[in-house]
Length: 402
Image (cartoon, rainbow, N blue to C red; front, side):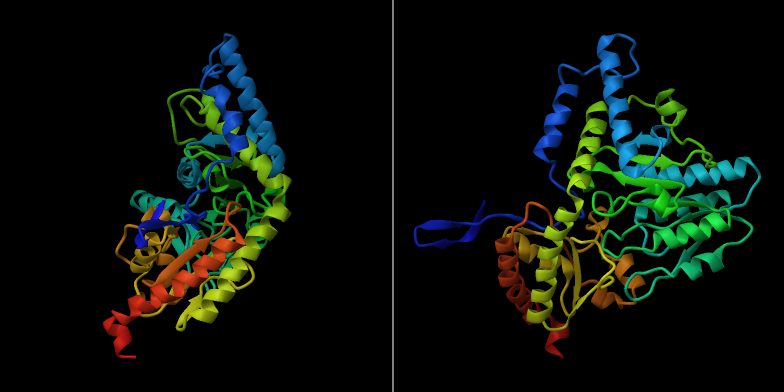
């Protein structure tokens, strides 16, 4: 790709820099290689009884075993889905309607900074008589486990708290909340979509009853994810149409996608400490350099308890969308928040929940590093972003009055 200004009679070639790994990740070559047979020569339906079908079924079973080993779960506790959004929907609706069928409570506890896959599902359930408590977080985006416990009533059927926030990277005290949920006998779900491939996913150490993952967040394919449902958890399947996934999710399984997800997860945890150290080094350089070079800037999210690749900021007197467009011209790709809401005009619900006023929240920027990034790319961002923000502020009426 090329920049838009000439150097003599030629155009300067500019290397694209992708810093939006929280939105999605490129699929690793080893993952593509593992998937290829199940698109062509092994493209059987895993429910078919003949040889091609049995081969697909074996591939599914092997993938299920591999993922279960990473999660320290039983293979039969995994339900393959189309991604994190379906897994979150299935988890929350499944627990809620199972409780209703048994004549139990109607109360759900979650936080104000959840992904919309959780928030909108809880809001949707309210039309059926369910009630939701949306817990606040502190300035760093951390929920207080004590507040979770205090919100539990005799009507509470589910607690859903994300493992790590997709916008600011704050990692929640899931294990502590899990102990509270277990002691109070309340089903506990975590949306671990952003944490998969980086943080410990041992469902027993986390103390969760349900857990959602999505393959494309850890260098796997899009369109495939999973829901872990602990044996004995009261949960009702939400997709009918066939006996697949032990009657828990009707529809032909995405064999190639599941194989790819399992391979990506295996690769991620085979070198998780080394990978985390690498992306964290790049992240820390971004944080240090940008806060040093850009006045009226602030790191958002917890300074320590955050995802290793997540650097998120607010810059006063400038719009996040304008920052993204300025970076796009330079072939630098980032985000102003969740990729699912990047077209929205409203400020991020996560940033405002941290206590930032709307005019500041609109100046948010998320930079998430990945294994394909280099120190040289980070230095180029540090050279390009500060003058871009200075130029935008020079055109801002709000900045002119400062």
